[in-house]
Image (spheres, rainbow, N blue to C red):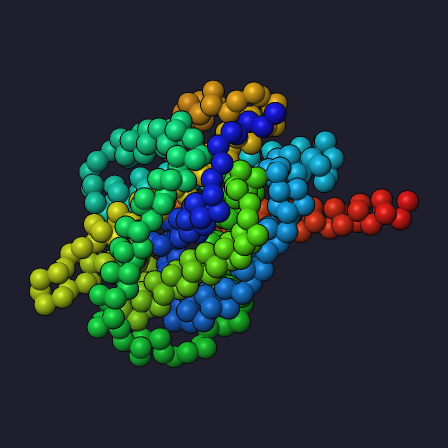
Length: 367
């Protein structure tokens, strides 16, 4: 008996995928990429695009082994009860940790950029309340809500890109190819496993999507669109703000919105950018929240995941506070290790499970 009765359409999955892909990356991606590659960050961003598509292909291939099973069930089918159970627990831990991290990102952003002086706990509990409310309504409702907010989100991003065109200075990208090769490789890893790697959350969503013949094509088109949008934001940051401010300001895209000035009339619309970022990060966070409670219920063989929503909300509240001492620790220390986590969950473990599945399938045919 399945724990989830709701189903979402492939179009709703595509929209949720774009929200999850862009999500918090809309603000932090430029700073993360420029921290190692500097003015060559746009080059590493373009290099990371085909490599990231390959990572998505790997996860889609894993999901297609049995499209009706989540990664918690699939890992036990492929690796066996004990080893597969350990891998499932590993994914659950990541979903919990990632969800608490995104809550902390929202808190730090709002408390440092907009609601200065507001206690972080107030912002955190308000965010968790909205997450719980959305999750209680169910996956189908979240899918429909994402379609309602998506046009607004796209409009905000297009406005940001178009209104900044007069301020672009291409000379700020020079000198080109002046970054050492190790730093370029490091930046490419960020570009691949930061946005693309976190799509492993859809290994919990994919079984509840109404499948169509074109679903794989839609997945790759949406991911490509999200990657192009992120790299456009990165190029705008480098050509409008310059390398120094892109590298050292963790919310470079938010600062970009402050730069918009059309005839001294249309200006200071950074709240619009903040709204777009909060919308996308909300859907990204609620997906990780959903993945954790659903996966835990499957792992414990429960009849419903809903009794786990409120306990997990309290767990997220506490963990989001413990995950980092302050915003400086969060900005400087976590990214260097987070990319390794993403690589493990999106590349290493899926590749391992695919290899084991192929070997076992060949052995069973031989016998």
